Image 1 (cartoon, one colour):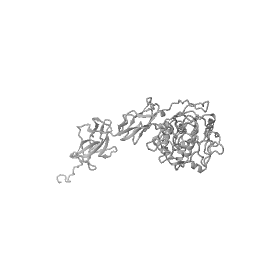
Image 2 (spheres, helix red, strand yellow; image 1 turned 45 degrees about the vertical axis):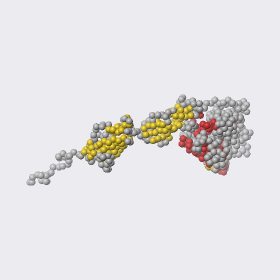
Image 3 (tube, helix red, strand yellow; image 1 turned 135 degrees about the horizontal axis):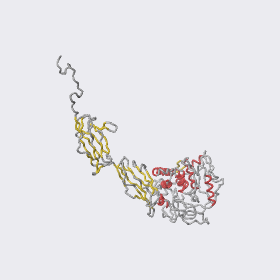
Image 4 (cartoon, helix red, strand yellow; image 1 turned 90 degrees about the vertical axis):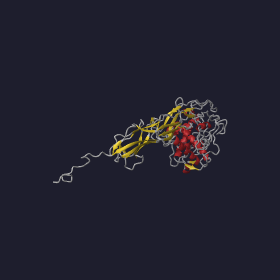
Length: 585
């Protein structure tokens, strides 16, 4: 891996001309100069500058055979990619079982934590192939750790970047200079910030294919990239190794695996061939060149490059190509690479009531290794867990750190559902790890329910409606509370449940009779009971309000209807002579 993962700068007109010819031939083709199935066009330009694929055994320039039935494209230069038979394509499409599982596990993890990135496991497979041949054909143990270390050359400035030892030999066994390590070829200084625990053993090990694949996935998804776009895919690959040759090779394998890949037993994966010797022809190849091996341009000594993922400024080759340049690049690191610490700046816990705003806005601060603030860093605040709380209608927002290195989320508003969830502040690179805030939404509570008019009485005749309904006030610690859910039930005079269709009732929103309903206190903390009817059975009843431990009973009286006046009530005057008391004729 270039930039941080073992960079080699290419110099010399001959090498430059060869790569220019290769990339020019790639220009109107599907692969390797383009990515299939990407929206927004498929063309890729690779403006790589003076870069050469690594010359150690762990960077492979082999290309897969063209599957039978696929047309040979115009970009297939002599000696590069050749048609193959079914057996050859089937063999090259085999990926060792544990390594394949690591790629797919990393894809699933990134889909969960960085869904906007849309990382395909086939991209990890393509990079894993060119970096280490899938951990030397899958030579890993049951936990995914390589059997024997996979080490790149010593980065001592002699033909490679100059990177002095940063890990005291912990990962690469070299106490003088760093070496690229593991199946995805991380250098130790990179791993210190990018390492991940992919297999859940509590250890971040660059020699473990699960850890390395997950770390590579987070790195490729850095800077908010969308790998479902041409520009996002290209930027991700070039960030791993800023080389046009590398870009073309990875894209070819990516397309090949997208067209079909399968699992093979560990230790039996196909091993790529070594890059050609520097003296091999660069613009053409003899007939004996294996069809899947891409000619490697002549190598020249290189100048050192920064041990971090950044694109160094273009430099002119030294007058003496055999003497590496010692002038360090001056390109400042982007904010995402400078930050080493992400911490909370306020309370770690957030709380509010349903329907209300959280009083505290979650905020984090980004610092570099010297404890200085990092400005211009994009921080994603997202909601994790079952909740209907939202940031102005959104479940996640991106905030940029200010001059003090602080990113503060917008106001968070609780929904109607009570419960707990997490507000997570995270970086696209995944490092430093996310910062979590525990959030709780509770139902508003009351310790007292009391009538607004405590002197009022409620009486109605059977069959009539009460002239007014009781209003109650919900309060907590002497203060009225909005949003308190209260159950209202009609009971008999002893507080017992009534028989069905007996006693007073309320007309609900659908004008149906009900003797149990739920009210919510308004902004003033008042509970309004609508449309209270007496029912048709005289007696004394209780209207009980209950909100948690707070209760209030309101007496209701239903009286008999008044007796009918003479001539009322439907009576009629008897006809004379019909027994109504009239004298006989």
